[in-house]
Amino acid sequence: MPTALITGVGGQDGGYLAERLLADGVEVHALALPGDDVGIDGVHLHTGDVADLDATRASILEVAPDEVYNLAGLSSVARSWDEPGLTARVNGLAAAGLMGAAHDVGARFVQASSAEIFGLPDRSPQDEDTPVRPANPYGAAKAYAHFMVEVYRRRGLHGTSLVLYNHESPRRPAHFVTRKISSGVAAIAAGHAGRISLGNLAARRDWGWAPDYVEAMVLAARATTPRDYVVATGEAHSVEEFAAAAFGCIGIADWSSYVDVDPALIRPVDAPALVGDASRIREELGWQPTVDFGELVRRMVEADRLLLETATPPG
Picture (spheres, rainbow, N blue to C red):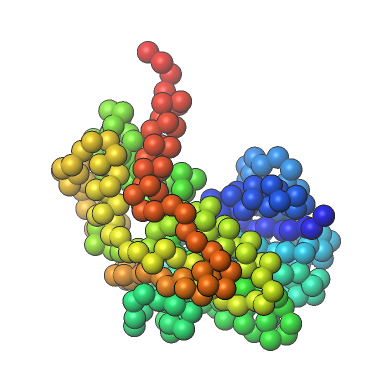
């Protein structure tokens, strides 16, 4: 039975990945912070913090997995401005430590990188040859880890850095703008709220379905030759479009009258358009997105409406 170790198993992608690997018959181990509620039957949990490089290395040497998926990290760009040092340690240095341990046990390694490494790109769409020029501390830390994958590949590591564009699901934490919109719309539909506060409505992102992006991780880990890949839908939509589609799910066309723009929610530097060209992974590994933008928004709104219904006592 093959063995895999996942960091960041408590997040959106980590949960989907653990379920995907378990369905394949993989023995799944996961590194989780103390107190994390993972709640996935069949996962062997190891308590620890990826920023503790020695302890993390010891865990990998003990498990000796065939595959290591590094999904751990501080995921908030806004928080990275407040805590750039912590962001560098968790999203950058910790990833390098994991690569070193994976190399020493002969494991295949997948790094969850981010479109934020491109920052303010000089071309659109972006592909694997787009210059890396991050515009925030989060992107800078991810860029360091992205480059370290290539460094370790030259030492013989079967390592892949997946440049993941925004990918969403009902498991997104509430502070992400997509989930903020879907949960806010559900609350308005239920009569529990009247308005939503958002930041830059013009920001454009390439939004995909999270389980599709987890599938890309598995394909990359099992590829014959390790390479870096952009994982994206190739379509950009604005926050405004997301809000309009979400309100449309509950029959509201005049969505703007329910939305406030809060300057405090606007990033110091916000990339105006991030859209990816996933031609390489489509052609080489056969990856394809399965859920389009409209269906993604609908699934998130419906999931949040169901969550409210089950949480509200009848009568």
